[in-house]
Image 1 (tube, rainbow, N blue to C red):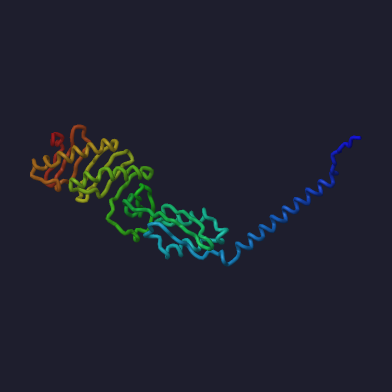
Image 2: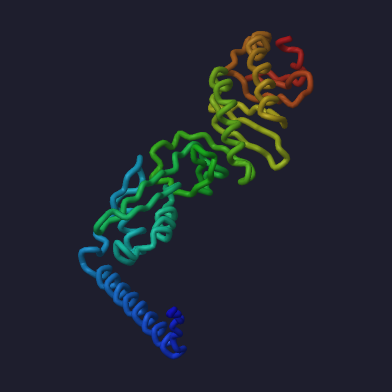
Length: 264
């Protein structure tokens, strides 16, 4: 005789009861876990006790942190919002970038990259600087360690280009004995230099390569042009390099607008 195995059918109400029981158990476990985590997070051991700052930091000191950062921090080691904390640090005038991490059990570790000032930007009264990346920032100028910076100006969206141009032209002007004190880019794309000796050089428009070539030709021919009038390069007061075949020139006590053949 064969015995047939018949599948056992669980009544619908029993299945619903089992499902409800499992759901209640899962909710109970989750509730206990959440409550335990909440209890742990509130323990004094995990309350934020301090901040460890790393990086080549010069201007972001303890006084600045206590005044501008600490009052804005909230939460414990587990609950503090790292992204919000990062934004708080990056609102400090000298901070370019900040990376925030938790340091068990109750501290934060913040690696700070400060702005490295490369030049004044725009009018001195504006109080703005360019960092070494060509980015504009507005610090407390009273905290500036080196106030012997060049002044650069131009449209704000061209600040990086202006700094790159300054760095490219600087060696030639220093070799001439006329270090760049000010470099301006007009809204129409024309460049002008004022040297530390007070000389003004109109470079005109063009690519960086064109400007560099124009300046090199001028620097090579300037000593010869000065010799014609018994003047040294240091006597330069004004030059206009925008002429197609040369430049106009004024040296101390001598002026010409027909110096394009000088140095040929």
